[in-house]
Image (cartoon, rainbow, N blue to C red; front, side, top):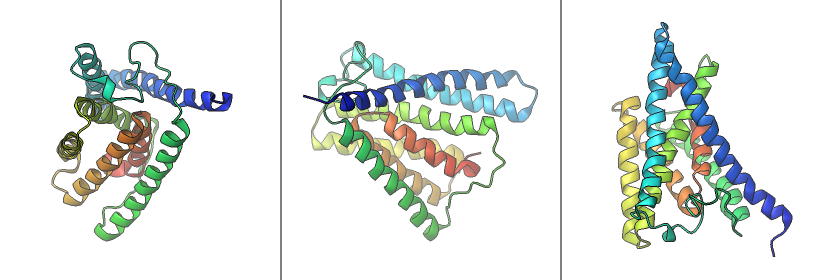
Length: 234
Protein backbone atom coordinates (compact mmCIF):
# COMPACT_ATOMS: atom_id res chain seq x y z
CA UNK A 1 0.00 0.00 0.00
CA UNK A 2 1.40 3.36 -1.00
CA UNK A 3 2.02 6.05 1.59
CA UNK A 4 0.23 9.37 1.54
CA UNK A 5 3.57 11.10 0.92
CA UNK A 6 4.16 9.03 -2.22
CA UNK A 7 0.69 9.79 -3.53
CA UNK A 8 1.17 13.50 -2.96
CA UNK A 9 4.50 13.47 -4.83
CA UNK A 10 2.95 11.56 -7.72
CA UNK A 11 0.42 14.32 -8.19
CA UNK A 12 3.09 17.03 -8.17
CA UNK A 13 4.59 15.94 -11.49
CA UNK A 14 1.24 16.04 -13.22
CA UNK A 15 0.47 19.42 -11.72
CA UNK A 16 3.84 20.58 -13.08
CA UNK A 17 2.80 19.41 -16.54
CA UNK A 18 -0.53 21.23 -16.27
CA UNK A 19 1.16 24.40 -15.03
CA UNK A 20 3.64 24.28 -17.91
CA UNK A 21 0.79 23.94 -20.41
CA UNK A 22 -1.14 26.80 -18.80
CA UNK A 23 1.92 29.04 -18.82
CA UNK A 24 2.67 28.14 -22.43
CA UNK A 25 -0.81 29.07 -23.64
CA UNK A 26 -0.92 32.39 -21.79
CA UNK A 27 2.67 33.34 -22.70
CA UNK A 28 2.28 32.50 -26.38
CA UNK A 29 -0.93 34.52 -26.68
CA UNK A 30 0.75 37.43 -24.91
CA UNK A 31 3.76 37.43 -27.22
CA UNK A 32 1.74 36.89 -30.39
CA UNK A 33 0.12 40.25 -29.64
CA UNK A 34 3.52 41.79 -30.46
CA UNK A 35 2.80 41.18 -34.13
CA UNK A 36 0.83 44.43 -34.01
CA UNK A 37 3.73 46.34 -32.47
CA UNK A 38 5.60 49.06 -34.35
CA UNK A 39 8.82 47.93 -32.63
CA UNK A 40 10.75 45.63 -35.04
CA UNK A 41 12.25 43.70 -32.14
CA UNK A 42 8.90 43.00 -30.52
CA UNK A 43 7.38 42.11 -33.87
CA UNK A 44 10.15 39.54 -34.40
CA UNK A 45 9.40 38.08 -30.97
CA UNK A 46 5.76 37.87 -32.01
CA UNK A 47 6.72 35.85 -35.10
CA UNK A 48 8.86 33.50 -33.04
CA UNK A 49 6.05 33.05 -30.51
CA UNK A 50 3.63 32.28 -33.32
CA UNK A 51 5.97 29.61 -34.65
CA UNK A 52 6.56 28.05 -31.24
CA UNK A 53 2.86 28.11 -30.48
CA UNK A 54 2.17 26.32 -33.75
CA UNK A 55 4.78 23.65 -32.98
CA UNK A 56 3.37 23.05 -29.49
CA UNK A 57 -0.26 22.93 -30.61
CA UNK A 58 0.71 20.66 -33.49
CA UNK A 59 2.39 18.23 -31.11
CA UNK A 60 -0.58 18.05 -28.74
CA UNK A 61 -3.14 17.93 -31.57
CA UNK A 62 -1.37 15.12 -33.42
CA UNK A 63 -1.04 13.20 -30.17
CA UNK A 64 -4.76 13.46 -29.42
CA UNK A 65 -5.67 12.70 -33.01
CA UNK A 66 -3.43 9.63 -33.08
CA UNK A 67 -4.96 8.34 -29.85
CA UNK A 68 -8.57 9.02 -30.83
CA UNK A 69 -8.17 7.29 -34.21
CA UNK A 70 -6.36 4.32 -32.71
CA UNK A 71 -3.16 4.92 -34.68
CA UNK A 72 -1.24 5.42 -31.45
CA UNK A 73 -1.36 2.24 -29.38
CA UNK A 74 -1.48 3.59 -25.85
CA UNK A 75 -1.17 0.08 -24.41
CA UNK A 76 2.50 0.28 -25.28
CA UNK A 77 2.78 3.47 -23.21
CA UNK A 78 2.15 2.22 -19.71
CA UNK A 79 3.11 5.38 -17.88
CA UNK A 80 2.90 9.10 -18.26
CA UNK A 81 0.50 11.58 -19.77
CA UNK A 82 -0.77 9.11 -22.37
CA UNK A 83 -2.20 6.59 -19.93
CA UNK A 84 -5.50 8.35 -19.27
CA UNK A 85 -5.33 11.14 -21.83
CA UNK A 86 -9.10 11.61 -21.96
CA UNK A 87 -10.16 10.50 -18.48
CA UNK A 88 -7.72 11.76 -15.89
CA UNK A 89 -4.60 13.87 -16.17
CA UNK A 90 -3.39 12.85 -12.73
CA UNK A 91 -1.33 9.68 -13.19
CA UNK A 92 -0.78 7.41 -10.19
CA UNK A 93 1.88 4.71 -10.29
CA UNK A 94 4.54 3.23 -8.04
CA UNK A 95 7.49 4.50 -10.01
CA UNK A 96 7.30 8.23 -9.40
CA UNK A 97 10.23 8.58 -7.01
CA UNK A 98 12.60 6.64 -9.26
CA UNK A 99 11.37 7.53 -12.72
CA UNK A 100 11.00 11.23 -12.09
CA UNK A 101 13.39 12.17 -9.32
CA UNK A 102 16.41 10.03 -10.09
CA UNK A 103 16.02 10.14 -13.86
CA UNK A 104 15.80 13.93 -13.78
CA UNK A 105 18.93 14.24 -11.64
CA UNK A 106 20.90 11.86 -13.85
CA UNK A 107 19.79 13.58 -17.07
CA UNK A 108 20.44 17.02 -15.59
CA UNK A 109 23.96 16.01 -14.50
CA UNK A 110 24.76 14.54 -17.92
CA UNK A 111 23.53 17.71 -19.61
CA UNK A 112 25.71 19.91 -17.40
CA UNK A 113 28.81 17.75 -17.90
CA UNK A 114 28.22 17.57 -21.65
CA UNK A 115 27.81 21.33 -21.85
CA UNK A 116 31.14 22.02 -20.15
CA UNK A 117 33.16 19.24 -21.79
CA UNK A 118 31.88 19.75 -25.31
CA UNK A 119 32.24 23.51 -25.04
CA UNK A 120 35.80 23.27 -23.76
CA UNK A 121 36.87 21.12 -26.74
CA UNK A 122 34.94 22.82 -29.54
CA UNK A 123 34.52 26.40 -28.36
CA UNK A 124 30.73 26.15 -28.53
CA UNK A 125 30.17 27.32 -24.98
CA UNK A 126 27.19 28.73 -23.19
CA UNK A 127 27.09 32.48 -22.91
CA UNK A 128 24.88 34.37 -20.49
CA UNK A 129 26.22 37.71 -21.69
CA UNK A 130 22.87 38.96 -22.90
CA UNK A 131 20.92 41.95 -21.72
CA UNK A 132 18.03 39.88 -20.42
CA UNK A 133 14.52 41.20 -20.36
CA UNK A 134 11.13 39.74 -19.54
CA UNK A 135 10.31 38.81 -23.14
CA UNK A 136 13.64 37.04 -23.66
CA UNK A 137 12.98 34.85 -20.63
CA UNK A 138 9.48 34.03 -21.91
CA UNK A 139 10.91 33.12 -25.30
CA UNK A 140 13.49 30.67 -23.95
CA UNK A 141 10.86 28.88 -21.86
CA UNK A 142 8.37 28.86 -24.75
CA UNK A 143 10.99 27.29 -27.01
CA UNK A 144 11.68 24.49 -24.53
CA UNK A 145 8.00 23.71 -24.01
CA UNK A 146 6.89 24.03 -27.63
CA UNK A 147 9.65 21.85 -29.02
CA UNK A 148 9.25 19.11 -26.41
CA UNK A 149 5.48 18.99 -26.93
CA UNK A 150 6.25 18.00 -30.48
CA UNK A 151 9.47 16.00 -30.25
CA UNK A 152 8.85 14.18 -26.95
CA UNK A 153 5.10 14.12 -26.38
CA UNK A 154 4.13 13.39 -29.98
CA UNK A 155 7.07 12.24 -32.11
CA UNK A 156 8.80 10.01 -29.56
CA UNK A 157 5.56 8.82 -28.01
CA UNK A 158 4.04 8.04 -31.39
CA UNK A 159 6.82 5.75 -32.59
CA UNK A 160 7.29 4.06 -29.22
CA UNK A 161 3.56 3.31 -29.10
CA UNK A 162 3.63 1.48 -32.43
CA UNK A 163 5.87 -1.33 -31.30
CA UNK A 164 8.14 -2.35 -28.45
CA UNK A 165 10.64 -3.95 -30.82
CA UNK A 166 14.22 -2.72 -30.80
CA UNK A 167 13.95 -1.60 -34.44
CA UNK A 168 11.24 0.91 -33.55
CA UNK A 169 13.35 2.27 -30.72
CA UNK A 170 16.28 3.00 -33.04
CA UNK A 171 13.95 4.41 -35.70
CA UNK A 172 12.37 6.78 -33.18
CA UNK A 173 15.81 7.92 -31.99
CA UNK A 174 17.11 8.42 -35.53
CA UNK A 175 14.06 10.45 -36.60
CA UNK A 176 14.37 12.54 -33.43
CA UNK A 177 18.02 13.38 -34.08
CA UNK A 178 17.60 14.18 -37.78
CA UNK A 179 14.44 16.25 -37.45
CA UNK A 180 15.67 18.16 -34.39
CA UNK A 181 18.98 19.05 -36.03
CA UNK A 182 17.22 20.06 -39.26
CA UNK A 183 14.86 22.42 -37.46
CA UNK A 184 17.72 24.03 -35.55
CA UNK A 185 19.61 24.79 -38.73
CA UNK A 186 17.30 27.82 -38.82
CA UNK A 187 19.11 29.14 -35.73
CA UNK A 188 22.62 27.75 -36.08
CA UNK A 189 22.89 27.60 -39.89
CA UNK A 190 25.89 25.43 -40.81
CA UNK A 191 27.55 25.60 -37.38
CA UNK A 192 28.49 21.92 -37.14
CA UNK A 193 29.61 22.14 -33.51
CA UNK A 194 26.24 23.55 -32.50
CA UNK A 195 24.29 20.96 -34.49
CA UNK A 196 26.28 18.08 -33.01
CA UNK A 197 25.75 19.48 -29.52
CA UNK A 198 21.98 19.82 -29.86
CA UNK A 199 21.85 16.31 -31.32
CA UNK A 200 23.48 15.05 -28.12
CA UNK A 201 20.88 16.99 -26.15
CA UNK A 202 18.09 15.49 -28.22
CA UNK A 203 19.45 12.06 -27.32
CA UNK A 204 19.33 12.95 -23.61
CA UNK A 205 15.76 14.18 -23.86
CA UNK A 206 14.77 11.11 -25.87
CA UNK A 207 16.13 8.67 -23.28
CA UNK A 208 14.64 10.75 -20.46
CA UNK A 209 11.21 10.55 -22.00
CA UNK A 210 11.74 6.88 -22.85
CA UNK A 211 12.40 6.14 -19.19
CA UNK A 212 9.59 8.20 -17.66
CA UNK A 213 7.02 8.80 -20.43
CA UNK A 214 6.48 12.22 -18.89
CA UNK A 215 7.04 15.19 -21.18
CA UNK A 216 7.52 17.61 -18.29
CA UNK A 217 10.98 16.23 -17.52
CA UNK A 218 12.62 16.92 -20.91
CA UNK A 219 10.71 20.21 -21.00
CA UNK A 220 12.43 21.42 -17.82
CA UNK A 221 15.82 20.16 -19.01
CA UNK A 222 15.33 21.86 -22.37
CA UNK A 223 14.30 25.17 -20.81
CA UNK A 224 17.39 25.14 -18.57
CA UNK A 225 19.64 24.60 -21.59
CA UNK A 226 17.97 27.47 -23.41
CA UNK A 227 18.80 29.78 -20.53
CA UNK A 228 22.46 28.80 -20.77
CA UNK A 229 22.56 29.51 -24.51
CA UNK A 230 20.21 32.46 -24.54
CA UNK A 231 22.69 34.72 -26.34
CA UNK A 232 23.26 32.20 -29.15
CA UNK A 233 19.53 31.66 -29.54
CA UNK A 234 18.62 35.34 -29.62
